[in-house]
Length: 449
Image (cartoon, rainbow, N blue to C red; front, top):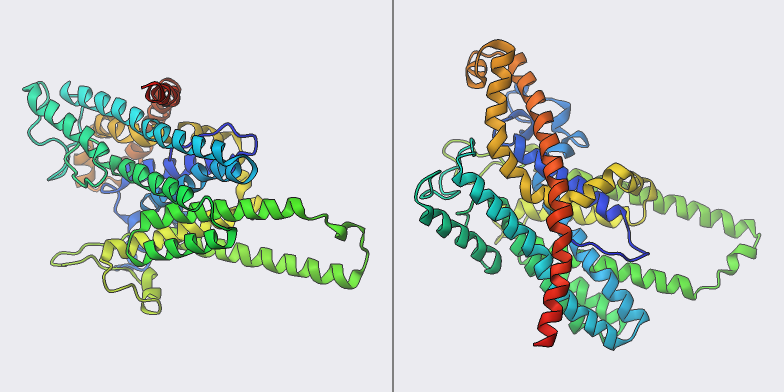
């Protein structure tokens, strides 16, 4: 999620993709639980409350936040692997091992330091009584009260720190429950580094075969997050293999003029490109699949008709409903990243300056957005509604003043967006970038010990 590199061969579209995914996650957390219609299926009943274009792909992608973390994981698996694979293939094994051990140390601090800073900021703001959005049952820090005893706050803060270090923890008693991805990032990164180490001296075909089997194994066992990481690693290996083979070819085709050969080859190229676009569209559909909905009395949530393909491709018996959903979202993310590697027109928007800016602030945006929402959202909705109608937001909503509710959301979203982007940029420049240098200093200190 937070991997950066200065390599001249760096694929900058990955930064843009990561930044766009972070923005979608932020919008998802802003609106989910408050706006019901976009998160229902186009095919849900009653039809009068659904059948909106935003409920179907491709427009649905703007609220597909639940699938964007899977894109983070695929991109992370790819990004942390490419430099090491290049060094293994083109440099000395000594340099490769040195770089690998360095990456392990720096990766942990690269991910952990900004998280610790954001946790401290969140707890100070919470203690100061700035939060206006309450936590759900079993979330947050129930014993901690604004301006109350600092002991419960300190206990919750320590518990939050431990949840990052304890990579097997799944506890949700923290002010930043979306930080569950950080231990997964660390754990997935360490698995990728271990695979690179263990397979560093085996042959190319054996390496690809083992990685393919590991991808299947993680999917089979219901570990979609590691399925994503190892798919990213496999893509990095395949791209390195393709680049190596291209350098070895002398390409005599450039001097040939045999039309009987060139025309069929051009036709095959067009067919392959069309197939890649089709597969990319399929992956796009998968990440846009709606989250199953809970209804009163349900033991498990109900999958909408968008998921009817599960009757043809049934899930494995040991997958619960969440693993079933996340696995298919992950497959969609894998297909999208894999397709973009070969589709320059799809990659192009993610290389634009706006997307690159989002890539620069992506990690900070992911870390800070919920804190901003909990402070600003309810206040802005009420103030905006009062200014427009004389009613507070909940009164306007209760009376069915849909125009006022809509205007309050538009104005509040714009204001929150500006504040979140500015805060994210500050964190990216003052904290996120500093974590890189801290990682280097810690590594040097450990070497000297």
